[in-house]
Image 1 (cartoon, rainbow, N blue to C red):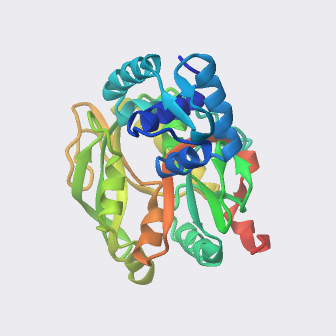
Image 2 (image 1 turned 120 degrees about the vertical axis):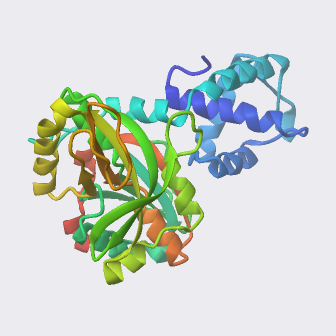
Length: 335
């Protein structure tokens, strides 16, 4: 491995990938812009740090003022990393993040999985309005968020000038809480759930998590197939959601945990199926029951519907929930 940390390793492999795709030398400023496009929100100083590490290992070469190029050793390292990446599907990373959740509902402390969106600074008030509405309708996974202002850096996220970074809780946090309560689960599908008069009707679209390299809910959000704003206005619409399965014997325990979270302001629960019965029209495996939850990227879906540009990375990281704010308290947020 190039770096002792998983996140650092991913950055350095992405740097090698970018250099391998360009025949000309590249400087840190250009690399920083390319990394941002790939979902790595880092500043120029961080890029230079990783370039130094790569150079020390002979994976890149400095060609003076022109920048850096990848070496044969770097190409070999990249080839080995990409071979591993092909089998490291979405579900593997998701379950890995969920397993590392340490949030305790009793004391409201611990790590949660977070998504991050970067939006224009001028859009902050509108974004907060939407997040509060999602919270009131109980279709936001958790009543917490964190805001980063321009030039601030946190959890490997650097916010450029004129932008705002917004962390929200990903619904993988629910999976982590259930897993640590001894409830084994399987992520099955991501898709769209049709709501009529604020009641879930059925899944209209489904993509299986197993074997995919693209998070299923994102497919429908980026294709603009959701109608979150319509739901907020009328109670009817298409919302991004997913479906997981748990053993029948764990249903009562899962219900109890989800009820406890709901009483503390958490939301996003669509349906808990009965043993061996379909959930919103989707069959489940033998001796299992299904749980459907609203996808954590629902804020992104709403922003896209009203044409607010946003770069969203979901899931992005684990962060202590103590460093987030209750959405009910966001009236004091500065603009």
